[in-house]
Length: 189
Image 1 (cartoon, rainbow, N blue to C red):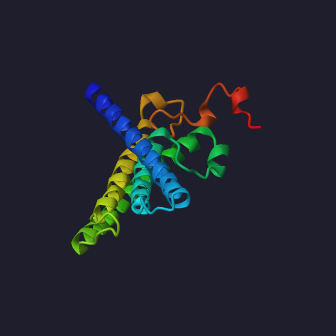
Image 2 (image 1 turned 90 degrees about the vertical axis):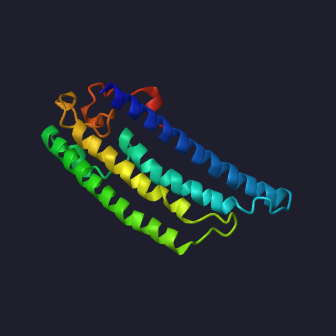
Image 3 (image 1 turned 180 degrees about the vertical axis):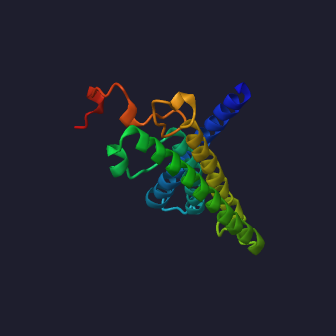
């Protein structure tokens, strides 16, 4: 189990690095392109659009797994929030399991897309890179997200979750938090 925890921690740190790097890269490319174009009247950042698009694809699809790990994915919780504990527990298990299946199906279909891109031999306009290099992060993101949703399903079956519902591996459902005291920093002005 120690090996799995270490591997999990390394994967999480890698995800955090990839996501941080992608967001910083998007910012640099967009701001650099505007400054080069508007201030210096230069087209020096002719590749900014492609690099930004590449980074957006990476951040989006690799971010799915990270959001699932942290229990931060978008959810429509109108019925869920008002349900009693046992119903919420069942709903969370079903939701996570079905979402994992959908993620694996999307990984399969996006892998077909990557193969299509590879077989066409298409390249990007500015950087002249094969387009499949950008698309390869789509199935990787779906596979890692599917794994995270399976883990979220599993954690709700463990003894750790006997009196709690877990949205993510370490994210307890906000309905199950014992201390619901409102702090000053929680208030929006």
